[in-house]
Amino acid sequence: MTDFLYPHRVASLRERLPEADENNPAIAALIVSDLENCRYLTGFSGSNALVIVTQEQAIFFTDGRYEIQAAKEVPGFERLIQPQGTDLAKASAEEIRKRGIPGAGFEEAHLSVKAFNALRTALDGENGEGKNLPLIGKSGYVESVRALKDADEIARIRLAVALADRCFDYILTVAKTGMTERELAWKMEVFMRESGASHLSFDSIVGSGANSALIHGRPGDRIIGASGEPEFILLDFGAELGGYCSDITRTVVVGGAPTDKQRAQYDAVLKAQVAAIDAVKPGAVGKDIHAVAAKSLEASGYGQYFPHGTGHQLGRVVHDGRALGLIDEVVMRPGMVVTVEPGAYVEGFGGVRIEDVVVVTETGCEILTGSTKELIALP
Image 1 (cartoon, rainbow, N blue to C red):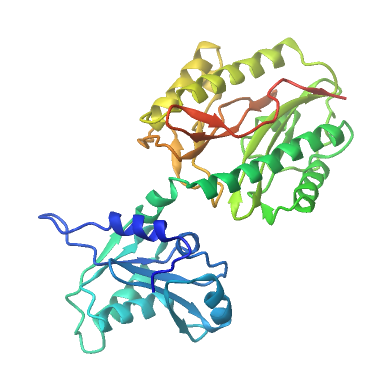
Image 2: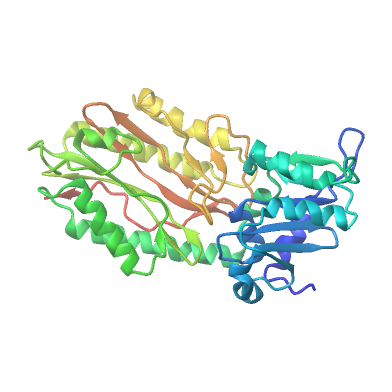
């Protein structure tokens, strides 16, 4: 069978399976156990799956609960339906041994020691006939394919980003002093779900006043505007739509016009974000893009208040791979989708973060996020 739903993804993975050299054996097969990677390769939307890919074979494992679903969603793959409760990794190893496949790689980042031991035992076989078959821990093969989004994926991300933009417009109509952070977060979730989101990309971050300096602060019972003075609200949120995620951060002021101190902090972050976006282009290295943002904030006097990376890859999950951190050697390539989100967080005063989603193009990058980055004051 060759009529895969995503033939180019399977083909790209096969191209990445290494041939033997003096230091490493060949990877005759890759056991894909990470569910998100399985979904990416096959289109399967169920909750239990495993895939084996060789140069000639593509085998899909799931259990009997999903037999009808897999027949509809997973064309092209040989489908091996197992009894519910079967260890799919063990079943895959037994299949590799039975078919005479000379060893396999497995996703070491997604397999526990216990699961690996079961995999090794199953590959060995009861009589030890497979004990000489290599089982090699590998990582990054499927992820390297996932990093380069095709036109359909970018179109889906655009839709998810557009939904987040609409949510920000909605926030500007409902956020006000007197409501709690949790109440605002709930209104945001209801809006995104009623607008078509299958679920949130992640739990929304809503931090007001001093809480806005909590980089991943959870919305709580603090009353927005409780200080009686103008204060920041940091809003970081996103929605999954059509299997792909969005991620946006905006910071607004509530309770009056921004103070000079607030505006200076906001302008410093915005300047750093614009500079970092300008640095996103084919061939640029993630850590160098991060350095652009960090140096900009340092020059503005806020370097000590920027303790995190500048961004990450975005796709089927909100953190779809590393990208723009202090030590990231990721090289930007056309089709990569990343966030650019520097921030400055002053304990006891407040934090500012501004985040856009951008796609790397042949000549630079395109900003997908459309929400204004003007510092908005709400009543």
